[in-house]
Every structure is written in structure tokens, then in C-alpha cells.
Length: 115
Length: 120
Image (cartoon, rainbow over all chains, first blue to last red; front, side, top):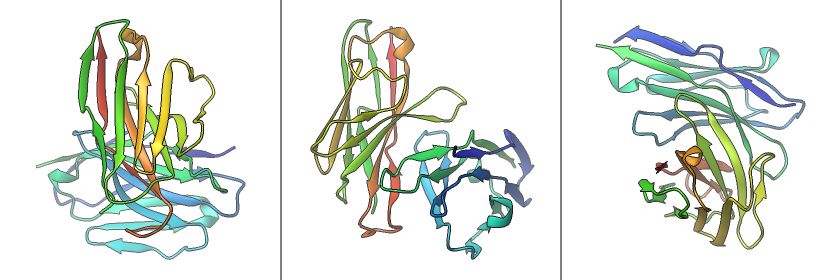
């Protein structure tokens, strides 16, 4: 069965601190995709990144970086020099192999960045 | 690019009435759209997969007669909550799957802003 676990329910940091959001997944598929989405208080999910199972390169986009480790089935997300606007719920998700495109979401991590 | 809209953004209705929610992909074609439900402080729960030109596929435990889904075109899917009751009050979110890779990442779901339904 496929599963995504975000063990951190809530994280609170002070502005400018670095913070890492953990994501661990389970799947029997050899081909799969991993995603991170941000859900600010407005409610809309914002796409952040998609990574396929064959690409283990880490990625950096501005203050955001992602560390994909197949050996530990983890896809962690780090925000460097956090800002108040980063406060949101962050979801990690896994998509099934095949053509369904279904997403399996983790429970989400609520990040609060205090000024 | 990759914009998905939902209408209405919020709706309040009386128990027993039906409510229709629209989901549109504005700048790409989506052969597949998904409908989710989200309770406060919880994750998204997939309700159904909507395929253009065919019947929707519902997740286990979701009543198909209660939540009617129509995917009439490559850019529009609708969810109708029939005979709504207070327990149907929730945040409903749709997503559209961009398989073409035309905009950004191939085979990525882009989400609408959500519809908050309150049934009195």
C-alpha cells in the first residue's frame, strides 16, 4: 500500500531561522512521483515541486530546497531564512504509478513563522 | 500559467437543497480532474476522479448519488451536492491534471482555490 507520513504536525520558528519539513513515503512501485504543496490560510494549494523516482538530484529554488533520498524513502523540504509569509500548511504527496494520477497526501505540517 | 478556478468560493444553503460547484482549468486542457474534501486541520480526502467524456470514478465510501460529478469538457468539471445536509459542510477542492507538460511540470495536478460549503 502507498502511504505518505509527515510526522511533524506543527512547527514554530522565528523569522530567519532555517526549517526542515520531513516527508517519508511507502510504495512498491518503481516509478512514482513526489510532490510538495503549500496551503496558506486562504486555502488554495500551491504547487511547489514535482520529483520523479528516477531523479535523485536535490533541487534548490530560492530559499526552498528539497532532499530526495530513495534509500530512506524520504523527500524533505527545507526553507532557508524563513519569513512570516512562509506560514502555511505544507503537504507532501505521492502519485500512483500508471495513468490514474491519483495523489496520496500526507497529513500536512503546519508551519508558523513568528516575526 | 496553470490556473484552476472554482466557483463559487463559498456558499451557504439550507438543508435539503442542491449545490453545484464548478471547476475550470483556465489555460490548459485537463482530461482528468479530481475532487477533494478537506475538514478543518485535516488533510485532503480524495472523493472522485472525473474523466472528460466518461463516468467519474468514486473512492470507497463516497456516495455517487449524493455527489454528482460531470466532466462535460476538457476545461470544466462540476460537483453537485444533492440534498445537502449539515454534515456535508466542508471545504471542497478540485484539481486539474496537466498531462501535456505544456505549462510546467508534466503530469502535475494544479488546485483550485476551494469552495467552502455551509449547510444550515
